[in-house]
Image (cartoon, rainbow, N blue to C red; front, side, top):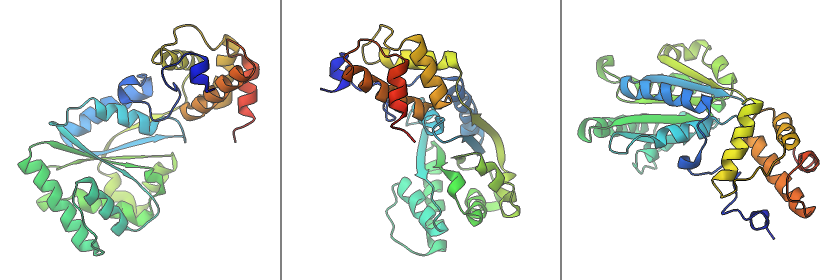
Length: 267
């Protein structure tokens, strides 16, 4: 038996792929949305930083879901340590331009033409998100500056969001990154949530699957908060493991011991 059946849940409440409409609007999420509103209108570059599992991608996903597709088009790319050619291919595919070209200059032109077509003909705003941007090679930051420039450095045709770990800020301080860094007009840092916010987070996730009673006792909430360091991804893992341990013990409420057992399975 799955713990969702055991506790009478409609679905698993602690998955990382939760629908945007079901996400809890935490302070970090609202901070990202506020800044995204600004750059979506004015263009420019935005930086979002935070520890692994702090909820950067989730905050961006929720924020983008608040816009109507007829107003803003978003392109989401997950960065790696590959070449600029690989990045250009991802960006073109994000614009629904299918290309297998291996030419950096041709890919750059194809991308820029695609951007101009969307902005000038379709009359919508374009936001490009590069997640895990802290993995990008230093020379790629110079490339990113190049693609934000159009003829005569006119109005920004799209907004660029760079999201990654705190080391992203260090890479933006490199000399080769200076031109791109000069275009950053706002940034947001997502830190760990508080004990009270963790309590609300667990309660919210249970509520959306039909559980209104306090399934986690106070000590369990504290144990999840301390064990996760206030980071959402690890909190989800601990919550899932604790629910499983509670079911195996044939208990009705998750306690500190269930969380402790769950923590032994994590790294």
